[in-house]
Amino acid sequence: PKQPITPRRPSLPLASRPQRKEKNKKNSNKKKGKRREMMAESIDINGGIEDVEYEYESMSSSEVLEKLEESWQNEKFSPELLPPKTEFIKSMMDQIKTMEENLEHFPKGDFVASIHKLELDRVKYIICSYLRTRLHKIERFIWYLLEHSSTHRQSSMSPEELIYAKQYAQNLDSHLQSLVLKNVPSNLQQVDKKKAIPRPNLDKYVFIRGLEQRDNIPLDTNDETADTINIELNSQFILPYKPVAELVQSGAARLI
Amino acid sequence: KKKKKKKEEEEKKRMFGEKALELLRELKRAREGTLPPYNEDVIRRVLEEMRVLFEQNQQEVRATTDGEEGLFSGIQLRHACLERNQRCLLAYVYNRLIRIKDMRWGIGAILPEEFRLSLCEQETQWFQRYNRGLASYMRSIGDGNLDLTQYTSPPKSLYIEVRCVSDYGELATDDGTVVQLKKDSQHHLLRSQCEQLIRLGILEHIQ
Image 1 (cartoon, rainbow over the protein chains, first blue to last red):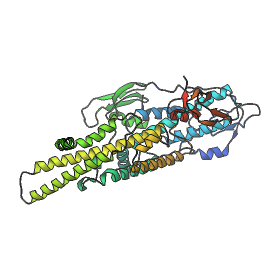
Image 2 (cartoon, rainbow over the protein chains, first blue to last red):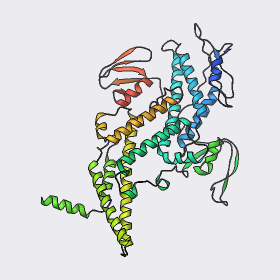
Image 3 (cartoon, rainbow over the protein chains, first blue to last red):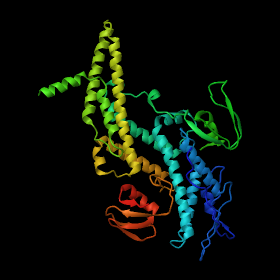
Image 4 (cartoon, one colour):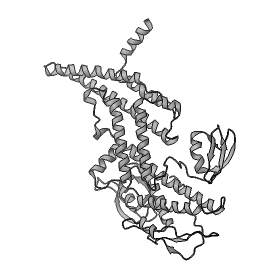
């Protein structure tokens, strides 16, 4: 299995002072049901930046980063497009923006600031890689995903991705039409979308680690008499993706 | 003249579907990062072959409905050839698109001259529309200025040493200073700023 690429986020102790609330941040970061803590770190230098406290909410920023890393790895190793984790992305991007603004106040070449900047670069890498992996999967399985999203209520694509997918599909379709399909004999001018489209290979073998206890997972969903396995916390398995797809999507297991 | 006639005869003896395969072989042999020019010639011949097969089939279908026997396996064979040709043509066009996309993600929205010349007109239009779709997607996420084609590998350091491979001119760095990028000059710059120029081949990363 591939080694995880990024190290654990180092937690640098920074000075903190009694804080005041920032009202507008609270409104802009509200998401249905889920709220996030923004960085509780404040930076103390001569002349001082305003220390801003953000709403303390259910996840700390390092937890958001861990969740983001987990979603990123899941997306990389899964053969199908997983549900989008837009809250983590948004939250992380907001935090990055705040951090960058804070870092501007440091003198050029300051050591602590450059460590922070490197960390921000690495987080940006994770975000870019996550979104890129998703886009490439969408482009690859475009017909399958569009068909899936029109027949199922919940699509694995975020609204922005859906717009992109539709535009991409239309572009591809009109291109193939104009170059090939218009010019071939009449009985071949349509491509049979049922048979000829690429679909994700759900039988691909993956490594998983259990995050919760789950018993009696059938190894073959079509066969009643198939073997079942029990997944315990922190146990690791290598098996086809299909039986554990639900676990990964619900967060009970992760791909490594 | 004799040689030409011999070649034509050889061409006639070829199997159906071989010309279409030629297209795919040409594409497969091209080195990564290059694209052979759009082979209009071979495509036209494949379409011609398909037209001939189709007309023969139509003729035989009419004859069968008129009562003639024994034509069905011929019709099936020709139909299979037609389907194969269609599949090869689609695969050729589609895989060219994949190569063009790889260039977009690897180099940027502005393609190198020789690559651009290998694209046919429809491919250029497709590429423009693809860029527009990608740009509007990138604008719609986060606060709108995340370029997904950046950060292609995990950053291991903040600053990197680079050497200039060719003259580029001036580069304004993040902290306001202006750097002259002349051939063979070395600089210690922020990674995020150099990445684009490294990919274009203007700067070279010194390990």
